[in-house]
Image (cartoon, rainbow, N blue to C red; front, side, top):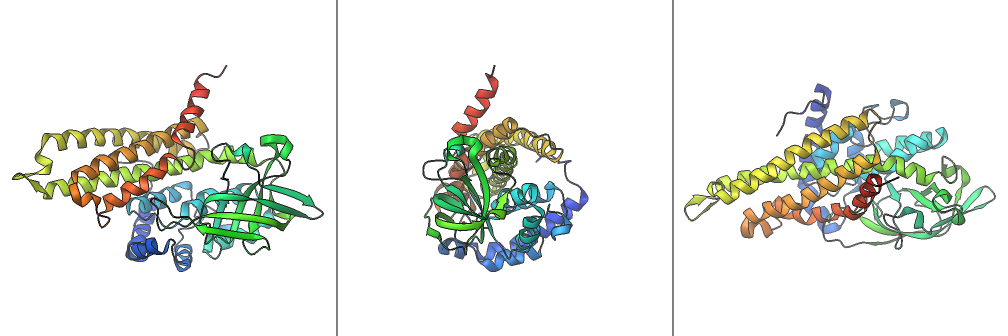
Length: 381
C-alpha cells in the first residue's frame, strides 16, 4: 500500500481507537446480528460514547468538532473489518448531515445531541418503489394544514429503517413543481400513522436492517421542515458528492483488505506441491489488482482532500463511486477464486465480502446512472 499523507497523528490515534472498538464491540457479535437482521441498540449507545457517531458535528451540540477525516477513518475501519451491520455512515454522513448543514438552530439543538450520543438513530428517506436514482419522481406528499404538514406515501430500501427514531424524509410539498417541489421534513418514528414494513431479506449486508416505511396521514409540525420548501433537490445534489465519496472510500477499503487476505492465504495454501502464490497466474492476477487499487487510492485520497476544502464536485464523486464499486466487485470475485472451495464458505471473510459487494454498484446511484451523469457533463453544450 502507498504511504498516505492526508492523515495527521491525531487521525492515526483515532484510527487505533476505532479499530479497538470494532474488535471488542462489533466483530464478536456480528454473526449473531446477521442472523437477527439488525444490530443491537446497545451498540449505538456504545458507539456514541466512543465518539463514532457524527464526529464532525460542532462541540456546541456535543460532537467532537472534528474534520471529515474522522468520518473517513470510521468508514475505512468498518469496511476492512467486514462490519457491514452498523449503519453508522447512513446515520452520520447521510441523514444527520442534512440537519447539521441546513436545519434551524432549534432542530439542531433538539436532535444533534441525541444523534451524537446514539440515543436517536437516523434514517434517510429518499428511495420509493417508483423512484430510485431519479429523485424528482418521488410521490410521497406533505400537505400544509395550519401549523402542520400531513404526510402520505411510502419509502423502500431504507437503511436503519427498523431501528430509526427519526427519518429525514424527502417529500413533495408542491407536486406540480417537479424537482423544485421537493422538501426535506423530519418525521419522528413515534408519530401516529408512521408504520415500518418488514425488515427486507437481502442478498448481502445481512446485519444491516433495511425496511419499507409507510406514512398514513402522519402529522408533523411545520417547524420540522429543514430549510425552505422546495429546496430538498438542491440540498440532495449538494450532499450526494459526500455520499458517493463515502461509498467509494468504503469500497476501496474492502479492495485493499481483500488483497491482503488473498496474499496471506495463497502464501500458506498449497496445490500440486507448490504454494498457490508461486503460480504465475496468481502473481499476474494479483499484480493487476494491486496496480488498479494503487491507482484508485491516489484518486480517492485526492477526492477526500478536495472534499475537505469544499471543492469536490458531483461529477468527480460520481467517477470515484463508479470506479471504486466496480473494482470492489471485480476484486472480491477474482480473489475468492484463489480460495477455491473455502472461498464459498461464509466463515471466510472473502465470502462475506463477495455477497456484500454487489449492492455497491446499485446503492447511492447505480453504475449506469453514474455513467449517465459523467457522460452528460462531457457532452453538455
